[in-house]
Figure 1 (cartoon, rainbow, N blue to C red):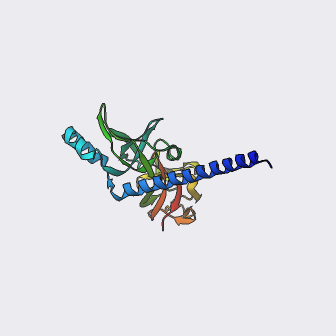
Figure 2 (cartoon, rainbow, N blue to C red):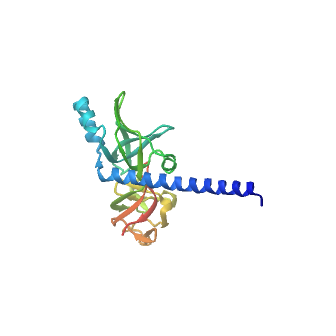
Figure 3 (cartoon, rainbow, N blue to C red):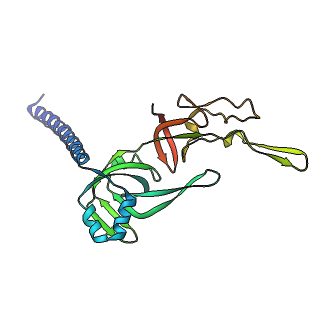
Length: 251
C-alpha cells in the first residue's frame, strides 16, 4: 500500500473519531444543561400566570422572564418554529362524557429539538422544561422558551374505573310490556376518573354486573390486571385528547 493511501485512510479514521467525540460531547453538554435547569426549575401554573398577566402585565413580565419552569400542559399546535402548549378546561355532561375547551389566554411557545418534536402530537399532554426568554402580548399572552426540553410525554393518573352495564335502559312499554335495551359489544367503553381508556388497551372487555344479567360478572382485563367497575387503579400512559393510550399499570 502506498504512503498516500495510508495517509488518506488515517485522515478518514481521524475524521470519524473526531465526529464521534464531538457528538458525544454535544450530548453530554446537552444533558448537563438540562440537569442544571432542573435544579432551579419551578412548577409553572398557567392559570396563575394568566391571573398575574391580567392583573399587571408589566410586573408579570418581570416575574416570569429569565426564570426556569417545568410545565405540564396540552399541545395546541406544532409548527416549524414552536410547540404551543395550553390548558384545557374539562367539563362533564350528565351522561358522564368528558369534553373540554381551550383556555388559550396564555400560551407557552417552546422550541424543542427535532427528536423530541417527533415524539409528540397535537392534543397530547406533556411536561417540558425551559427558561422563559420573552413575554409577548398579542391576541394572547405568549410565554416564549427559545430552548426547551421534553421531560415526559406520558402522564400518571389514579382514578376510579367506570365500565357500563350491558343493559342501559329498562322501562314500561305501553301498558304492560317491559322494554329492555342492551349495549352492543362495539359500544363497550372504559373510563378512569374523567378520562377514557382506549379500548384496545384491554386484553378482555366485559360489561359490568347487573342484577338482572347474571352472566355479565366477569372482570375486564387491562394490561394483565383484572379490573371492575369502581376499582381504583393507577396508570401511566399517553394522554391524547382526554384518552389514555400506550397504558401500563403502576403498582
